[in-house]
Image (cartoon, rainbow, N blue to C red; front, side, top):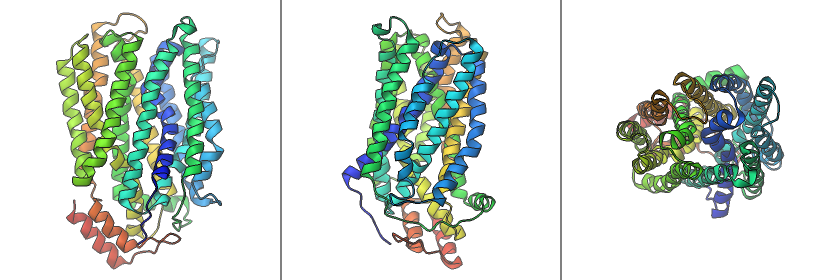
Length: 469
C-alpha cells in the first residue's frame, strides 16, 4: 500500500478550492433567501417553488457530471481540468444570480429561474470534480482527513468573509438605499475571489493515484451503488444534515433583524458569529479525531445539536441578544465538528464499495453525494419559503407574534430535529479508521492500479467492519 504525504502548500491549495465553492454555498445557505424576499421582491411561495423545481435538474446533471469525470482524463489529471475550464463561468453565474433587473414581476421571475439554473449548473461542473479530487491526491486516511480539515477551515473563512462583507457592503451609504445595487456589487466581488481561488487550487494540487474505473453502463453503476450500504448511509446523512443546516442558516438574517431587533451591523455580526464558531470547530475536530473515534464524534455531535436547539428555542425571547448570540455560537460550533469526517468518509465509502463488489464507482458516487447536498438545499429552501408564507411573514414591517415564533422555530427546533436524525442514522456507519486501514490493506491500492479483492478477503473485511460498529 502506497502512502502519499501532502505538503502544506498543497493542502492550502486544496482548501482554496472550497473557498471558491463556499462563495455559492454560503450565499445559498445564509443570504439568498433573504435576498430574494427582501431585496429582489419575490414572494416566499414563488421562491419555494423555484428552489424545489430547479433541484429536479440536478437529478440529471449531477450523475452525468460524475460519469463525465469517470470517462475522460488529461495530462492534468481526471478532475483538476474542470477547475480551470469552469472557473470564470462559475464567477459570472454568481454575479448574475445576485443581479436585480428593472423588470415587471413576471419577467423578474423568469430572470430568477434562468440565473438560478445557470449558477446551479456551474456549481455542479466544479464541485463534483473538486470533491472527487482528494481521492486521487493521496490514499493515506490521515492525510485525507488533514486535507479536508484545511479545506473546511478555509471554506469557513470564505463563509466568514461573505457574512461580513456582503451585508455591510450591500447596506453601505454609498448605494443611497439601493440594496439591489449593493448586493450585486458585494457578490460580484465574491465571484472574482472565487475565480482566483479555483485557479490557485488547480495550480497547487497534484493527482497521484489513477484508480482503474470500470466502464459499466449507467444502470449497472446505480445497481452497484445500491449495494454500497455505507454510501447509502452517507446519502441519507447528507440530505438530512443539509436540510437542517440550510434552514437554520437561511433564517439567521431574519432572526437577527426581526426577532432580535438588530440593524445591519448586528445582522452581520450574528451571521459571522455562527461562521466564526464553525471555523473554530474545524480546528477542534482535527484535534479531537486524533484521540477519539471519528464516527462517534459525528454521531454524538449531531444529537447534541438537537438538544441545544431545543434549549435555545425555550430560553431565548425576542430581544434577548446576548443569550441568543451565546447559544447560536454553541450550536454552530457543535454542528460542524462532523464536517471533516463526512467529506473524508465519501472517498472511504468509494473504496469500501470497490472492496465489497469488486468494481469501482467513483464519479457517480461523488455525483450522487453532490446531488444529495443540493437536494437537501432545495428541500430546505422550499421549506423556508413555505414556512415564511405560512407564518405570515411580510418583508420590512413589524412581524406578528406568529411570524416571530415561526422564525424562532426555523432557527432552532426545526433544523435541530434534522440534525438529531443525522446522529441516529450514523449508528449504521461502520468505517472507522481501523476498519478502513484493514480495507485498504486488502485492496492494496497502488498509484497506477487498484487490484480487486477476492470473495474471501471481502468477507474478512466485512467481519472487521462489523466488529468496529
